[in-house]
Image 1 (cartoon, rainbow over the protein chains, first blue to last red):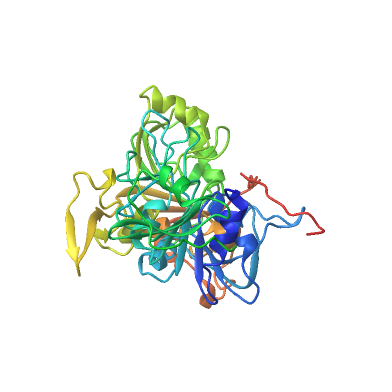
Image 2 (image 1 turned 120 degrees about the vertical axis):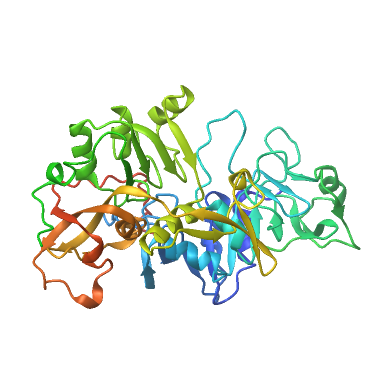
Length: 218
Length: 233
């Protein structure tokens, strides 16, 4: 069975380590915050100027001056701090943020990512995505393996305009976990009940399969 | 030295057609509501606006777009605005999209007196087209220039008559950076205090950067995406 978006988030949450500073993008990445393993304490960074992002506020407690990068009302946690946008991207650029989780439209076997622009459609802008992918030490992409037309999103080379080059380390999709290696996408885990053949047929980029590929635990 | 002006109309009095403006805020959070309204009332045209976003249809910079005052937007994300989209598709509006960290750091550079910065954001993408690339320690960086703005228009939580500013929560965002970067910086604050009322240890923006300050009124502080959790969770 292919994973749901929540299960993708749940699997990515297992990558979190105690003490990590983490930036979660919009979409599936945001859901990762709901599945942080017990005993693991991470600090969530919001690039509009907050370390220590808490859950959504209770009704009536929302503060228009306190939002996340998706412009949603949020709260702080004990030990939070605020800062300006240059410092926020400064800490990203300097490699202080341990893990960045992003969505993507396409990922190439070389670790290139495209997630900001579709030619012919209204371009809304890259926001902070180009800064994040150019600098983050560890980037995991959370996305569906294929697009709504059934076409592979894991490609030999991206067709869409790039957000960043050679930056993605790992991809977690509804079908499996794949590492970007020199030779291409190395299949590390497959979703429960999903065969290597199915993943192979839905991966347009080079897929490396070594030995028996274990089923995912999430 | 008197930096205190009466109101937003007074603060924006000499902003003329074709001016390059920086406007603080992230989404609708921490935007200079009073000055935007004053600029709409003044009807000044042909503006270049450097601001992370472009407001929504009926609020923020969206109000200036609706009255066709903006010639060019320099932003990182311009998603939530139908009138913006219409003007863009009709070729009535020029847009330069740049990475958010680059936008922030180009403001910072101006405020720190540095002509340019080097950033890896956009290397290998269309953002890099026509830009100088330098390699430092094996990694490529784009050279991006400091912004040059006639006016920076920003919003703070508290300020004093010396122009010292304190920001609140994530309404800080681009505001202190732009405050440092304008040839003339206009600050509107929710609460204007006499000099000495703010603790010098807690000032975010020193008054040297602020040329005009006033206490704003009737802040709407519109929430773009109200998200709440249920009480039992």
